[in-house]
Image (cartoon, rainbow, N blue to C red; front, side):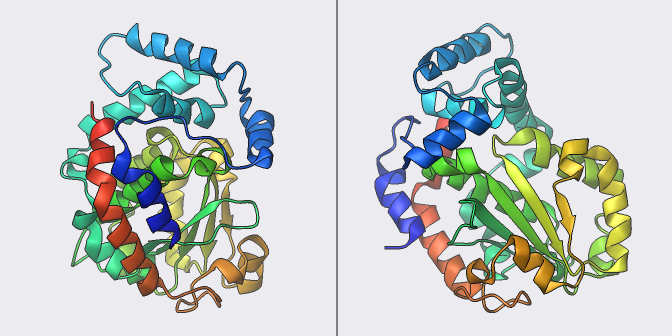
Length: 297
């Protein structure tokens, strides 16, 4: 049974509310304590306080299941005010960007997955973090807009948050392969509107810890794209962006070839991307709608 089908069988098809799923190891519990200020003994009280702050804030209508609220507390290291800001932003973003959220479903981004532009890799890195691979150089702006890439990443992250509690603790890393990236793609990304949207999704929209963003084989034209984006990134997030240039050795110091697909330009040793796409779609289609409806405003 694959990683995705395991999660579907054990979670998606039976979910009626978003429950608190236990962390799978003492090591994860310790990581949550050390890095996120999470204490299993005081956690119920923290969730209750967070829920009260939501109910007392006018204009907010959203899910208040304990398991859902815990995501936000973990993402903001159990600082209730910060968690509330993220919670408000999570729901406000749905109204700001209807082009992304209306009709959001895995079927709407099949083409992105099948083209191998975005993929959730089945194996985690040495720190237990899930890996999202983006091959932006394969994106053809004549076929669909970058909005579809936003949708794809959002669906993948939501699937992870629903299905794998360890992701809420360890977070994710993103590998962006810029091989074949050219002016054709860059010309669609060099605007303040795009940069503001990209930064908002990265920093303020989803309760996920993005631990690092690895850029590989970035061409000179990408310098201009990143120059537009960088001012919208918080200082701490700017430091998470690592430029590797054309050096696979440098990339592999952070992301081992054993977890990278073997049919890309990354000298990977893991299964090819098309197999991963089929796996993700067949598993994810089954339960996304029911779970997504639970968090609707």
